Amino acid sequence: MAKALKINTRDNCAVLLTDVKGGEPVEVRTDAGVSRLDARCAIASGHKIALVGLAVDQPIIKYGEEIGRAQTAIEPGDWIHLHNVYCRRGH
Image (cartoon, rainbow, N blue to C red; front, side, top):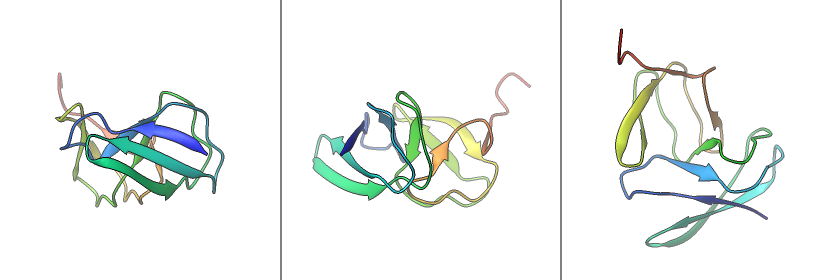
């Protein structure tokens, strides 16, 4: 089973510690314990996986901080990356 780490209690995404295939179960470690979800697509180690559903324009939280916003609807288990995130910082 692939593993991921939720870094901060506010985070709505986790960082994958191994490569994952679509449909593969992912064990997410948090300070409160372990939860599980299924990856909706292949995601490389070090990338983010959504822990909850996010509507367009909802903030993406990593390290307890907003790192961007959902550009499209994101489902739990989706890969969070440049194709579905935007950031207005620095613009």
